[in-house]
Image (cartoon, rainbow, N blue to C red; front, top):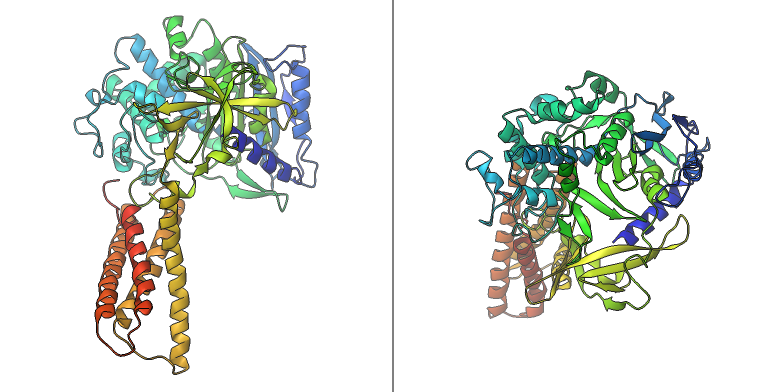
Length: 629
């Protein structure tokens, strides 16, 4: 999986190298050029030269990036802070120490730290069903009776699919309480708790609400009192509107977001993107680079300033989900592990405004903090971790004598929608075994697989680990990758064929309608039994596909969700379509059995088959199901 991401990133970066408007090469301060050796094996000055190469890609005529805030630290020492590019290109406002970028899902780590503070005090049991902390009847769409624990929420394996309700708002006055907002977007639970990892913003926000219920204190207030204030993080906001920190609220309103078009080599100004996150524990934090560095330094500090006992911090960074049956961790109580030259811990984040990453090595105490104002990321974000921490060498866990395994079939990302109006989405994003290392990868044993790829930065062979999830009979059910499993679907091609034929039926209907219209104009059309029903079926097939496409358009336009009213319109429309198609099937069959002159069964059969595919596709992909999701 990482191989695909690396290749895509490399292709994107190659396109972006054609870009850039006037921009300062870099504004840096507090840079210390002592020959410190970083975990990657590079000295600090070599790493800074790599950053300088990226910075100079904006050569005054093309855009390669918009802006980036970059920090490298080791223990309590800040090795480098760099501010690259512009936060407002048109007005020539460069990024600096006062720039406040959104942290996205790095916000979730405040939940996990808060949870361990309460665990340390004996107020929270990580293995206890969180429903015992929440108001009665809080969840509405659970499919399993098994407990949902804080560990499930930390590991993102409570079983929820992606929500189909809007998760963003543009009106600050429309934001309700955390309780109400969580109830409004609760997704369907499609997996048994503990079985499958599917990254869940909803699940993390529920964990934040658990903190609120246990303490009786607003979650935002709790984090300020127990994390921000002890660390001196005076330039970080957490609530949806950032009103909890006036400095951040004022600065954030000045920050512009951009997308870089590689074909035009120009930055597209998206404005300030004031999109609010009502379920804010999952991703609403915003602040300065210095505050993110300060937070990262606390997490590598052996004295553990956020806890009463340093052992609590060590437990927090211990593994809770592992590759296969090995001891190689994927997740540590909500902090994701990445295998570079060293094992790092941390979290990345993304919003409609931009992306960020906080990553650190507790052994060397080296960490990075990077924020960019591009929702698609940029080379500073993509390359910094590899520059500082290096790459996983294939021989670290493998050897020349390890066996090979051949993957077969198709895999679907677990972080998707598997019930309701959006059920068709994962079937359009299937990944073949050939895409996962050409189907042939190293088997390291204990359910751990290794994919090799050539790193584009230094042209060396590197590796990425993948785990296997097995059924009780030992058969493969999913592949493990950080934050999102890949589910094996043995009938993927059949389902994809059904969806394809559904689409083809609508296209064919358009042509048949056009042909009928031309025949009528030419006076060559003659009525026959069932013609009206067949026409109604054609119209319904076309309308059904239009409604399906509208589902995705509404999802994108309505801030990552489908409002209930829109879902109701689409769902009822689909029910009417399959009703008409069902009637057309009956009418076609009846006409085929009628005794009439010049009876032509083949005239009816194609229409009957296309209507069957439409009915089957709408029912199977649940395009009618607008309720209870």
